[in-house]
Amino acid sequence: MLFRSPQAVPKSSSRVYQEVIPGYTVLFVFFLINLMARSFLHEKALGTLRRLRIAPVHPMSVLAGKTLPFLFVSLLQSALLFLFGKFFFGMSWGPLPLLLLPVIICTSLAATSLGLLVATIVRSESQVSAYANLVVITTGLISGSMFPRDWLPEVMRDFSLVTPHAWALIAYDQILSIQQSPDVGIVLQCC
Image 1 (cartoon, rainbow, N blue to C red):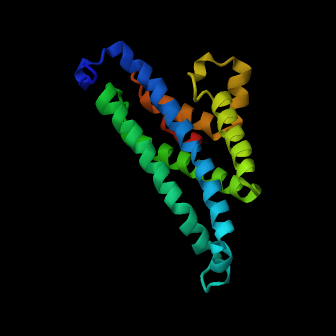
Image 2 (tube, one colour):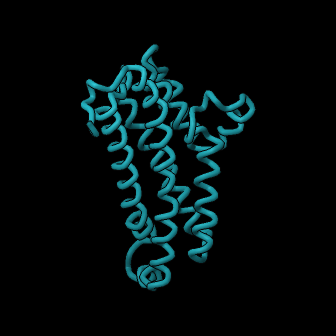
């Protein structure tokens, strides 16, 4: 049978999903950087950004209009991954599942902001591929998004705190921990 109901997922494997789903959710959110940078390059090539600049529209409105769709995609993607984790793999959302919302929002905001930064730096498709992929893969590796943070040496765990990924994973670990009640202070600090 290809698909199993959530009840058929063994309890020992659902613990694996407590680590894997948040890690890959954070990693996938940051792949948005590629899409944003390519979108801005495409807009520049078509000349629509130049036309918008001379239109009687406030620059912040233009920036919000170009950025908010990516933020919404990121939020939707994260929500769907957690929903699939819950309903298909029996993942627990912890004792306070509403705490997931600020972490999802802050992680999406961080990814969107980093996407804007890369979009302003790159000048060609090849630069998008080089810079964006380098940023996404490197930060994903050093943060513990691709494997549990517990596997990282202590020095690497400390160094990984330069990435927004690591902070999101620390918050998710607090929230999704089944053994203890989450420390809301740590979650808010991570946000």
